[in-house]
Every structure is written in C-alpha cells, then in structure tokens.
Amino acid sequence: MPPRKDPDASASVPCFYGAELRYLREEAGLTLEQLADGSFRGISFLSQIERGERGMPLDLAIHCDTVLKTNGFFQRRCEDA
Image (cartoon, rainbow, N blue to C red; front, side, top):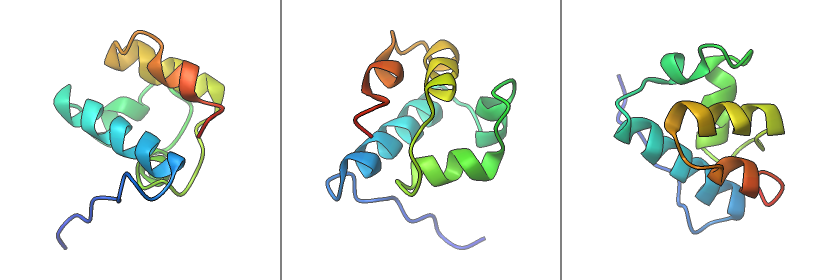
C-alpha cells in the first residue's frame, strides 16, 4: 500500500474540514467503512471529503457528529465547507 498523503489543512476550508474529519475519525479508532456504516454513503465519498475534494452534505454531517460525538461541529460548519 502506498504511503498515505495527508491533505494540507491550510490549503482551503474544505481541506481543513476534511483533515478534521480524518483526525476525529482516527482518534475514535474508526475506519472509513465503520464511519460510513448507516450513513447511506460509500467509503470513497467519505475519503473524498477527508481529502478536501468534496463538500459534506448536511445529513452526513449530522451522522458524523452523532458517531464521532462532536457536539454538532460538522453540522455547524457544513455550509462553510
């Protein structure tokens, strides 16, 4: 497997948002597959968000807040990214 390339969180708001999602997911000990479970989204969709390549829809933001116990962070910042 090639080494993982972390996105530059300072490059843009979506990159910051994605880097924060990845950090919190890994901090919780979850894989992309585990976070995607129950979200009606695929692993590649979440991976694109983590890389700052795609915005996060509101329903997914709510799902991530619930699973990662982030007190509404992603829902509040969803439109920014």
